[in-house]
Image (cartoon, rainbow, N blue to C red; front, side, top):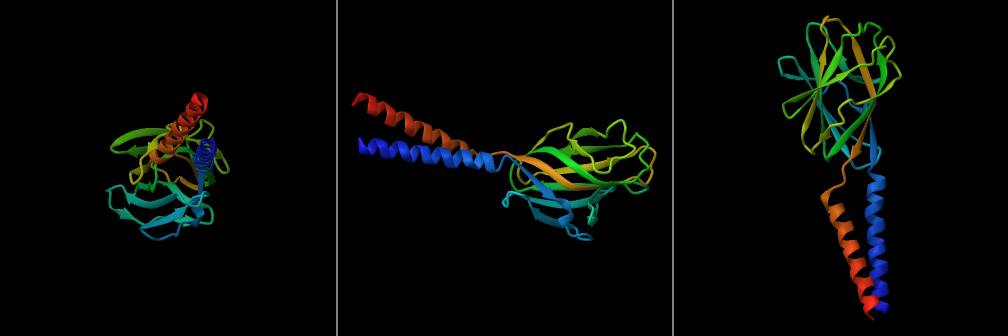
Length: 203
């Protein structure tokens, strides 16, 4: 009987730990103003202290470009004669949730959008219809894409009128996808609980 009780206690502890991982890593955010400006790439850590984001940039001809940041955050949209894109790469599987615009130029004409490129597939992300003042807005991704660990997600600026619109993000929010080991831990704990309860009933 004591052994069964110990098994049940152990099972409950394992389940509690596993569910704690779910709760702790559900949604995390990155402070993009922490990135170093003028470098080819930089890595920052999310609010959970474990998830990492590496940021780099590209020019229209796909050559490397230094990232540009200020106290307002990361410049993610800047177009004139030289289109620029920003590339995100996470160290674990994540789902895109939202981003916060800290600063936007007042020149947005309403025809701008940015494109998410994941593994060669493009996904349009349109700005709000009323985009006369994007500064301070938190916008949800239209495409809540799941980004596998180590896979690039490229944010490509698209501006038909070729103006000089500029947009800064100061925060990026994602949902961390629990690792398979977490699911295995929960299943093992449930199996342990079932076995212990079954033996208890038999006795």
